[in-house]
Image 1 (tube, rainbow, N blue to C red):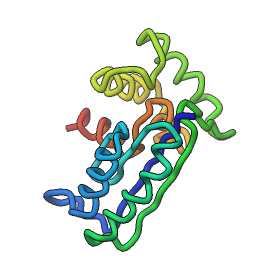
Image 2 (cartoon, rainbow, N blue to C red):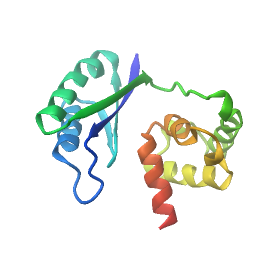
Image 3 (cartoon, rainbow, N blue to C red):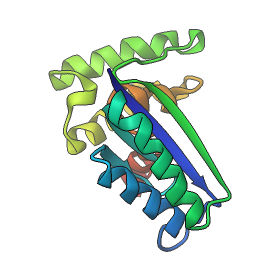
Length: 155
């Protein structure tokens, strides 16, 4: 079964270069052969459960060995999108944008994912509670990546 894990290392350092605990954890995931998406506030990795789950041990070891004081990890089955009751209308917007872009949101290229985020913003998707997390799950990226896409568009 394919899994997705998101992890955040602390302390945060949003100014300048990413801290060693974040970059070393990311590199440990890559060495394990996981598909990885590094963000300044969090990293998302994907892979088969028999590879991803043991690799998380190496990710955690690398983070703590390089100065992390805390690591938060979330793991879910790939392709499973949680849609909370509060975000009921969001699932319709996600389907609309997927149809508009001609396919599964998680299968889009990086540029198309950025476009999807902009389309969702224009449709009011980010007015829903926990929308960034739900959109991130649908796109197969971290919520921090969604925030980055939004911030780049606003700059």
